[in-house]
Amino acid sequence: MSFELMCTCGPTLKDPAMIAKVIQEGVQTIRINFSHGTAVDHENYFNLIQEGSKLAGMPIKVMGDIQGPKFRIGLFESKKILLQRAQSFTLDSSKQPGSQHRVYLPHPEIFEAAEVGDELLLADGLAILQIIGKSPQKLECVVIKAAEIGDCKGISLPARQINCEFINESDLVSIQTANKLKIDVLMLSFVQCLEDVQKARKLFSGHLMAKIETPAALRNLKEIAGAADSVLIARGDLGVEAGLAQICFNQKWICRQLKDENVKIYAATQFLESLVTKREPTRAEANDIYQARKDGICGILLTGETANGVDPLNAVKWLKRLAEAGK
Image (cartoon, rainbow, N blue to C red; front, side, top):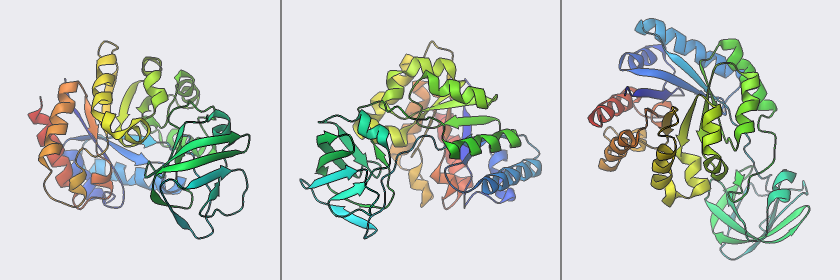
């Protein structure tokens, strides 16, 4: 089985000459993260990638990654607060700036879906709240994992499938950009069910890659995989939503479940995280890539390693070397 090297453009991978070098090293697909920047920024990145492809004298696929339904809290009067373990904290529908004891939650669908006893994850799981009381526009919680949190941090409710618009206005703009530029692959973030993929299919006729990063996506895995053209195990948010300790199990479980489904499985997040700042990967990272190949994963996407790393080309070379060792 051929193995696909993929990477992400960004501040340290935007020079066409460097893009040409990673393509010549074997990268077949370059990702543009639509969660950051404007449509103009995304088009500029696309043009830089095409210029790099011409310099390399080799074709390249471009992948656009839409943000998806990411939920966020409101603002704090002091910009950030320190949540203490066992303290009370309330999420409510008041648009007033937050305090040490409350903050605005502009998502009625979370109020509707949440139940007493559920856990809410703030700032990608840095802080965890447990719901102890509920009313239509208020969730009363106790802090079970302390952390400092700031304005507009992400919030998730892993135990529930939240009924919301899968493709929001921002994502519609991103998909319009993808269609305009004839981007090859559209990555779907925070997919929960078959219907999410079907909605995207009506808007984009190219390759759809569904990111598996929520408990709901795990529950509906085969339906999602059957509707998409490929799936990507997005280990970052999956580790937050389903638990860091379950990452290895979930990766292997996904691969086993889809073994006979004739669907390509990719994976991303922290495969070579040390190379964001260093020159050589850890032994654990080398083993991680080897195990991914053994699991049946057919390609790995580098994210921060190339978008923000000290040496994107070095990261690609290491991915290629370690992936080949796992044949």
